[in-house]
Length: 177
Image (cartoon, rainbow, N blue to C red):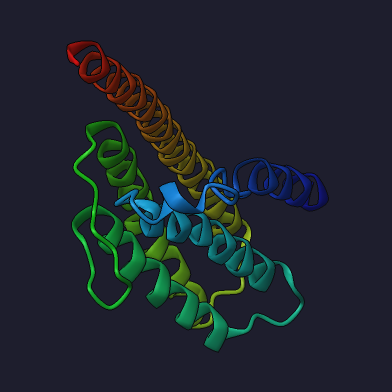
């Protein structure tokens, strides 16, 4: 069962983690949520690290604590901004709603992980919770990717329109002579 869970988790991660924007450098520098999108994808990696830590024979408490702290800070930054991580926070309702769902799941998962840190060796519930968290985080990453695609499309359309209008105005000036 754990092996199936791992494979499903990795497939989900690999399905959403590649950056859509890797070849669009000019657009990525202008897209305001690009860093947020990258760190949302990194959140998935943190979930995998925590899951692997819990699934191993000896739980790495130090890694678990560090991952929990980082995940919490970035998650709060994704919803409302964080200067340390250069996160703007999103105002896009669909993404914000999904991040709030992730935050709700994360708050309940924090309690379970805290019990494990204090000596409880029953990791099944924590792993199941992290799997649910991964699904919600993946949905948020998909929404960031959709937002970027929309931004990219509108930028391209704007460029085409501006180019077309620029040619027409140049032609109009030539006709006036």
